[in-house]
Length: 446
Length: 89
Image (cartoon, rainbow over all chains, first blue to last red):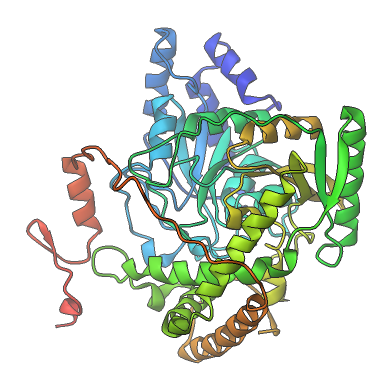
């Protein structure tokens, strides 16, 4: 299959050069091959996809089809799609069937996109490597020995392996951007509140965002513009009407010394300088509070995750999470339980909320001087699947992605090069609801 | 905590759970100690406009009901039996 943008593909479909059924069958055949099955990307497939594709082809002929008519997408296994198994890659929910669609699914189906399947992920989004799935790790399509990143491992790998047109993942502290970086694709974490979380099985509700993974930033923009918007089922959503602020022509390049692999830092700096020169941008070196990023993030994550998992008690659906889940999920539940027990002293969660305010203030100050912030998406190159690493090393993978999550800011990861034949992603962060600026800047790097 | 291990999924034993509990406490104390040095004001959000109009919601359809019941481990006619420990009797 040749690499074309989604807009180009939609034109082909509209002109009748490519039927929806044909597009679907191309992907289905590829998904069914032993080579693809070995990647462990899909957890289940939509059995009604062909009949739905035929209906869409009819609507296209009648000129009644939606904006995404004929495109095939797949979703992370924590986004609810009616009649499909939403397992969160956990044996806790392996038999759980969603009784309704998430808002994002309704929006995509209303535009005649076809859901082709459900994708593997880290169990309950707890992980940054794609290894913690109870149904086995996802493999990186670019290098089968390496992790694809996580927790949206399947969504990133599915795009990289060209098994669908686009995917949806969820990002709590980097779960879209991290695997996008390792798999060499584009991943957008929208502003918190820009996209409805209704129907998302949450990990940390004050951080979680649903976003697209695609081949280009233009494709990400197309999907983001369909799924965004206020939703009465998610009180945190809003239709933001603020216009893009006047550009200063200044990019903030984060000093990542002591927090990042030197080769990655050099690649990001070189690439940023190259693009800045071409576009007459000024570069300002800035500091972010990276030294408290992981501490703030994980205390809030443990607390909220413990709270959200209380519903998995095996009484109304699924099994009892503490008896079934793997080690990383158990760690976060036990950790969250410890925080809750000791919180009367205000020692953990309260301190983390104070630090969260401090981080937000730092971003506000920085955005008075720069249009956008650039830094590496992941501070290290991907390790081998099954490799022994410490918990702190694993948590440090998140150090460059958690800060925008803590502040609710939008951020994108785009592929900018390779080191030792491993993909490296560059991250762009802007003020709230300035996704348009992100797309404009990202395009300059592609 | 600083011991190396792989991140692959496996069933957690009771002994491992106890180790996880000890490690989690240590890790969280380390994290909290670092954050206690941050000087930042606490902020609170007050909703001055009152409650938000959520519209009329949506009516659950027949399928929603049947799928929800089929997800439940114990069902009595059209109700889910969810009393704590009732399935152990």
